[in-house]
Image 1 (cartoon, rainbow, N blue to C red):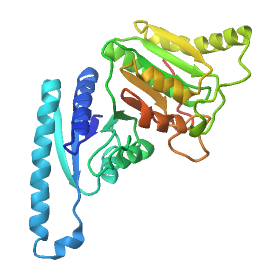
Image 2 (cartoon, helix red, strand yellow):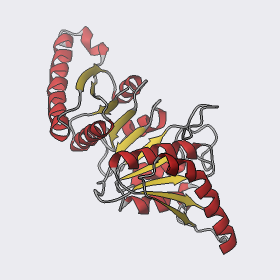
Image 3 (cartoon, helix red, strand yellow):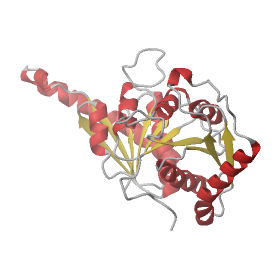
Image 4 (cartoon, rainbow, N blue to C red):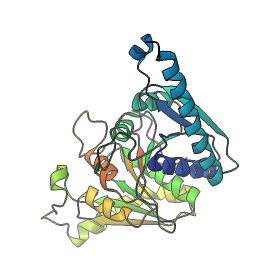
Length: 293
């Protein structure tokens, strides 16, 4: 198991390399840095074909040297390996992600249109990766907590597992946020719930969540966790919470997702608008719901 990070030499991707290196040091796990460079085999039929891929590979290797140097500056003790792959970025990263502990990417890379908040490669990777994905955007707040968004779906246990583990590894607090608002389409994200819970119903919901958190508090006694109930839509509340957090953790899907979708509306909104890095936790396979032991 290792942490995989993709880089294309942009400032955004180098920030992802630095974040991944620090995370690898925290977890005491190896770091694998990958750069995919496009090479169209149709062009290789011409006389310049061999020279084209050779130049591409040399440029890729130079870029990887810079990325590895950045990683070593952040985490000098970790094991680092670099790989240059001829191919398109998204499928190359997805292919390398199998068996990885975590895949890390920047929010944007080369080739994006000015003003875009999320690159196509980052969105595709976050949607289809076979492992958890961290998308590095904004700036983490060093003294801030981890913020975890949960609902009452089965994916909540996977989110809590990742969030408590991150808070323990980073030695910080944890805010578990639960939205009581019904699921709305993204364009109605700011609509508030009209029928607010009564104080008694709110207390009952808090007790239910505390029962859900109890095994995790027992497993991670050093993590100071706080539960927050909100009537704001989940995406809006988490984007707001990201402004003071070091990381936001959510599941890849929840009850508000369209059937068959691989990345829910809340996760997609965060990838576009969060002010801190976002960790997308993959849902467990049937029968493998993770709980503390």
